[in-house]
Amino acid sequence: YGVTIGLPSVGTPKVLVIPIAFSDAPAPNNMKQQLEKAFFGTSTDTGWESLSSYYYKSSYGKLNITGKVLDVYSTGKTSSYYQRKYLAGEDADYEIIKAALEYYDDQINYDEYDSNKDGYIDSLYIIYTTPIDQVNNNTLWWAYTYEYLTSDYEYYDNVEVDYYCFLGYEFFYERAASGKKIMLNTVF
Image: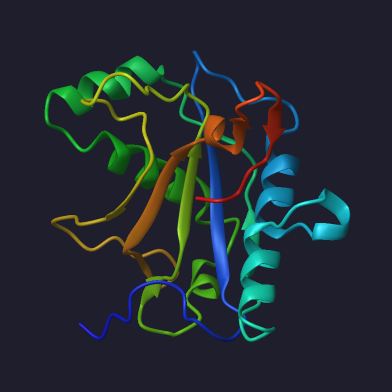
């Protein structure tokens, strides 16, 4: 296959972030802007390290992660619709990802997100608005990284999705032991 899997450890790769909303979990008005700060902000602007600034500093300037946060994609369906599919053994997350990628296909060039030119998007983040479920261990609404394995080829600008990260927007807000809310914690 020639897949080198994921982001390289040096260079200027691009990550793609797609915020996902549902009819029963609309996106906050500032979700895209908050995610842009969380992924690509500077510590001077935010007071903490974004994904990009953390890896830039920790790599001594050898890894400069860039990318784009797309506008929020609304599935037009409820989160419970996808949870039911998940419980029935269907790949509900794949359905969400495929619909979002098809929606944006004529608006962006996915090939730009394959910095190592192995035919796969290096890093795809799907950030959903549904509250995470910290109690139920049989739920779609948690955070994980997984491989997008389909029975057919799904090319978008001559590249495919391989690994993706699926997580709730709620993870970006952490409560300290003091009970104080910390906005946009990108340590994930």
